[in-house]
Length: 285
Ligand code: FE
Ligand code: FE
Ligand code: ZN
Image (spheres, rainbow, N blue to C red):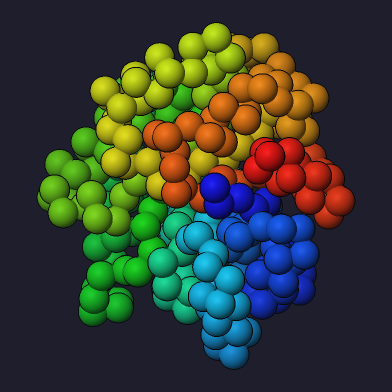
């Protein structure tokens, strides 16, 4: 299995791979910019090249870049939707320095407009972002955009597999079917559990449902987290592996499941260097 954790970029891009190697990881995640918003630092080309080289030498799986939390593609506020689109385009262009990176984002909160309106806005943004990136690069982007499955806290869209599928379908309707080359899904174990999918008692059933509705071929990455809350709580509070309501046994079954073979697994647990090292060992054993 390929596993890593969500790291800080404080030691630069090369530092991401060095830190991953120090905990026995062969992939990692990182925020494309300050998760609370703001401007991004320019990418240093040398630094990016060192990162790409290290990943190649150590057979890393694709890293998973995370869009900032402040990005709400389906906000009722037009200015915020514009910010989300601009951020996504800018991130996409920057990820060209690390080709093959997956880029996951939260589909957003409809903030009272209703789920259908939210889905419509987010689907439009996906379509517009990819089109704009293609125009600016004069080629296809080398990153794949991933919609993350959400816990359904507040007015979040993307809580059910059906909602994720609707976003994909609407985006493809607007863009065309070739969008499938640039659009996938990132499954978060804490989020689907909090969203009401009982992976403890029915992991195979949940995976079958994902396959039937979305299609496993769409799945490109897994966020592997325990949860502080019960199934269906709609809370989204991540817990350390084995210390939450999902538990180690189930998360090990997720890590070893044939449906997820070869995907990058990313830990987003509240932990430190040694804690992540331990979790990686636990899930690999
Ligand atoms: Fe996320
Ligand atoms: Fe996540
Ligand atoms: Zn979460």
